[in-house]
Length: 189
Image 1 (cartoon, one colour):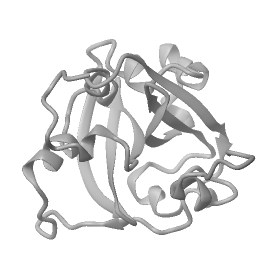
Image 2: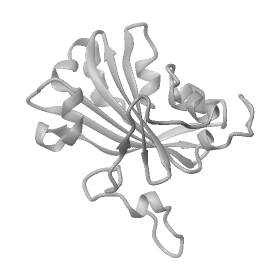
Image 3: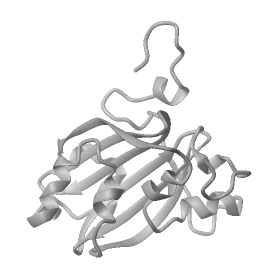
Image 4: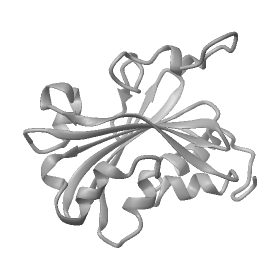
């Protein structure tokens, strides 16, 4: 959080006490319910690494972990509808920055059963963008992308499978994100 005379961004003021996501609920759209510009759709429906996509618009992508811990199913809310029942889930919440400007809030929920073998490393990625880990091999698939909105920010939620094992990724695109800069060209920095 910011201190002193600097004013915190609205998303930071609205953060709930126990999560990086704000207390404002996300409105999830039905497939036929949303209609938005193609430039926004192109970003929200990105099937590759969002980290790699962001890297085309800045000199450096960095991640600041906000919360990393195991949680129970009771703490999942509607996320439990998208994941198998597990005794506990690994939670990772981060702020992703492009050239030190906050571009994305990320929340990853991983059933304990997904954290086996080499994928156990998911609990230790720290300041490394998740996309660098997930897209480094050829064992990642995406079941779906769900689009939503929180206040004026676009949100997407993806059910991913790593070696066939599920994890849920929610991404809130903050106002300074290149997602909203429709006049910039791919690769412009």
